[in-house]
Image (cartoon, rainbow, N blue to C red; front, side, top):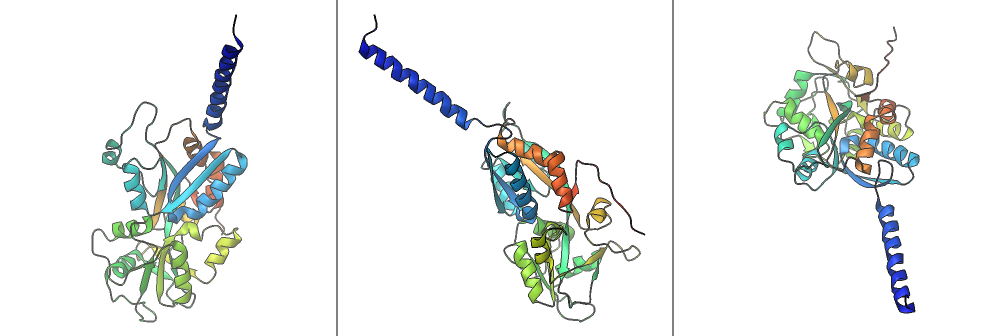
Length: 303
């Protein structure tokens, strides 16, 4: 016969087991439930602000925090096993992937989710509205480069060292030393503000910051700047970084958007990555006037 003291002890153990079980259920992650932190190059901030808001509204038990930083810092931290999910402008190289520790349940997965572009912006009073790709490489490497119309010195500004925008420029000049007149600020937003206040400025930003024509906030950012046309060669037409021109690759400054994940494939990090590469995420990308990498696109040409 069980004594009252033994019965009390067994009851306490039983309750503790139930409590542990309930607590384990509370922290259990799925594709639609749990907490995640993703690290995103600042060029893609508007897209991910919208995407996270939509994801959390559809899945109320999810919590996604985004940290916006430079691409170089994000990659270095990811390779040091400090981050689980990132968004940058390229896939990891074979060498980078080979140096990452993996196991059977956690593997590095890469998904190209979109195409976007680097945009060139100028003050509304600037009469130079078309840039030849060769001109741009000259402006980036010559410290005394001037505007063709005004003959004033070009003040080149970009967001920050190590960002996807900066790395795109260094790749564009093919190893040449960048001009000493090239100035770094702290964000794409600061580049927009600088160009609005300086008539001789040439701002270099991610097109995602000015692409969505239906977003009042974005139109507020775009007000007060002009987006330059860029042509690949003298014998070819010039294009602005609209979605159709990015999709056709006729705009010369196009690039890709990649999400890379090392988190458990059954968790919330993987769920958000699947969302971005799936139908709903691709529709958000298309709505943002970028080019979805997965979904079909319908383009209309107005004669």
